[in-house]
Amino acid sequence: MTVWLNGENRDTRGARNVAELAQKYGLEPHTILIEHNGVALHQREWIERTLSEADRVEFIRVVAGG
Image 1 (cartoon, helix red, strand yellow):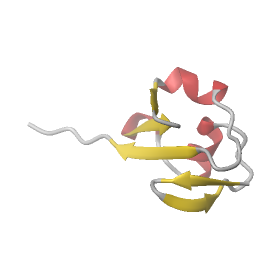
Image 2 (spheres, helix red, strand yellow; image 1 turned 90 degrees about the horizontal axis):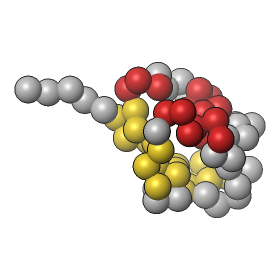
Image 3 (cartoon, rainbow, N blue to C red; image 1 turned 90 degrees about the vertical axis):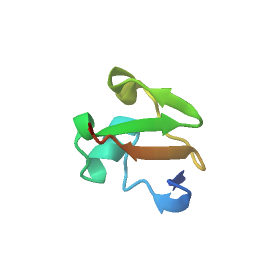
C-alpha cells in the first residue's frame, strides 16, 4: 500500500497503522509529531489510526530550543 508521506508517495512497508509506520521508518516516538490526513495525533492515538491507500501522513521532528 502507498501513502503520501511528507508530500512524497511512499510504500507503507507493511505498516497497518500510524504507530507501525513510524516504527518501520525508525522514528523514536518522543522525537516526532504525526499528522494523519490533516489531524495532529497524540501518541496514544497512533495505534488506533489505521492506514488506507493514498492517506496523507506528515512526520514532524520535535526540536527543543531556547
